[in-house]
Picture 1: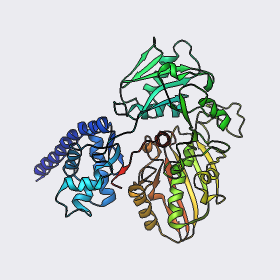
Picture 2: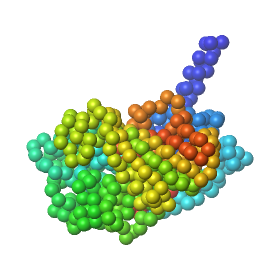
Picture 3: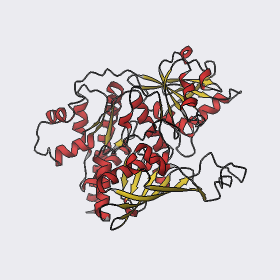
Picture 4: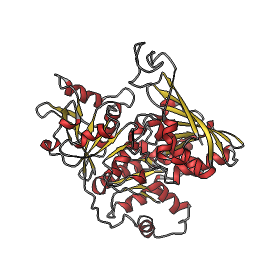
Length: 481
């Protein structure tokens, strides 16, 4: 009996491996041909491994209560490969589950079902032109933005990383920049090949030719001499945060728009994708992607306010230390931040609670906030203590947040975990703006405490990428709707 069980187990695993290995070339081909990105219940499979594909399918059981087999999603992928598609993000897991177990269980014609579900992109001509992107600054966010842009490298890529602008230019600088992109102590090795072209002062990564430009001010660069036109500049430096300062980028030849990866000052729109990204217009030349914490908490707060109503609350962030702090005690203009970051918990202020109102005005004046910097290099935690208009309970609230993470317009911003063992390091590389820790949820009548994790580097960079897509006027609908 045990031997038979082991054989069946091995056979089942081998079947999953074989299906996953068959899927990988099609997943890559759909992106290269049509800029179609495949996922399973929100888990992206672009550049995934066979094991990643299997694990994504296993996650379906946690949400639906029953498993989704790879042999059930394989026909979906096979059918998509025979279609002509416009750029989109297509969830084959949701399509397969609905076809086999959901509302479409009585359907027999898979092709007709898919054409109905994907009618907005099937047999549609792709008229979206690629846009040049420039990274101004190459620190933590700049290098992660580079990784996100390069992972989509291909002939049909709509956002093309053309240049990186940094200060310096001393001997060995180019190789050091490439090395920092190649290896990362938190996010691991770069997924691909990186070489340095000393003669042309460039980095070559996965087929992308990235010019490295040395400059001390945004307005002194002439991008057109490198063949760059109408570029979107992503300012990762945080040096210029108002319209006058960021406007220097627009004085450079070859630029059209600029986005700041920090909270903007004055009348600059602070965009949290999924919350107020519909306010981005073709006329917007300067935008801010707000802060990592604002991106983490605002989507959750918006969802809760629309469902239950928020009368007030306090946000406490337990935030990983950043380069702004000191390794050992030294002078710092801010209170307490001069003390050693790896050795202390440091109480400091955060403007994230007030900044929520810039993206979601309904909560203006209703929230207070503070922060504690802690000795971890990445992944932070927001604790939301909220008073609601309606009473609820833990089960109902968690079910609402789980459904929001899976099926709402905020599905790319909010993720959800039911794990009883998850800790901060498990969430390095999370592409969502935030991850609700359902096991830690506390509810007492209309008082709620939520624990929301967020990769303050990578998750935030993914949000910035989504805003860059909006600035480029690129449409990537998430399907099924």
